[in-house]
Image 1 (tube, helix red, strand yellow):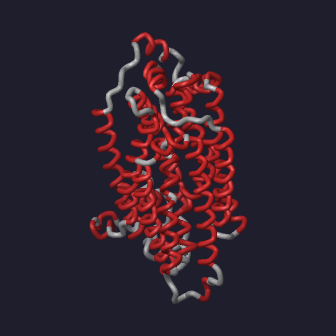
Image 2: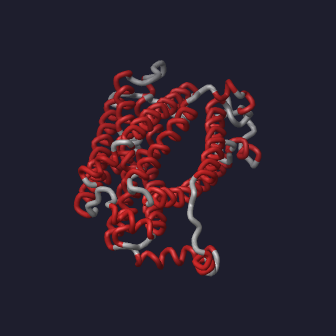
Image 3: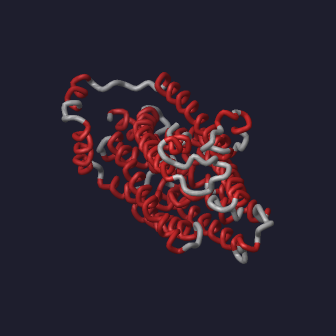
Length: 403
């Protein structure tokens, strides 16, 4: 809600009072409100994902299928949520269906984002309610709860977390490193995919003329359609991942997915360069929109990247669950620490890639190069470092159930 209303809040606390249809300058107050909202949203996402992943690991380990199937189901539902989310983001009619979303500070594109965020709020309320009521969880022993809650508050929780890192199985440290490098390769795509579509493929400019901004926004919406295709591929691939892990081992599946990301990042790089080759904004006043062939290729890349994304959203957690079940250390701790291995790379990419892009003045090319390089490195690391896991045996399931 904070992000959706950032333009309106910014106008209230000091931004220009000029109507959004005519004003093209910066709105710093709105930008700061958006940034605060984004960080809170990111914090909430990661806070929720830890216990949700741990609960899925507990529920799946108690059965005969093991964590690969459980985490693949988790990945499937992420795909379903992404499909609905990207459909709401790609919809350019929210401002027509609900005119009240538009204000003096928030014109058509902004109002459409409001509609998408309202949709997200409704989905969060529904999904959380279903999870709380249907996912049964055995409560801890009362004495264990009393003992664990006497640590001295929130700060003690973080201190205990870092102290307990020494209790992780040796193989888990390698899993953490490979996970961190994997996400270093993915965050450039996650952060800049629709911007790449709007700038490099559609030749738009969010800070240019009204026509250029409209072209950019059309490219962003087309990028959301591409991400919809990505989510569909993610959902279908989620059914295949457990079988592939049993046949090839999880480390091979993880490595192959990273090499695939490397190839797709390289493809994005080439498509973007070809699209921008010879293009001069000053000479293209009457030209809008992308080359149809390049747009189709870009959408194909977005769709194909959903295949390794299915691995990204399931295999690391399954490997962590298997390693801790076989060698000890606690699945809850492993899942929590794995989340740290995701958050830190996100922070690194957020703080570094933007300035690097600006320094080279080559659009999103540097970001894609960084992502592709990390993807290739991670593919090699996965083959060398990761333990061989295929899916839990009956003994491993029994051990996990005991934990």
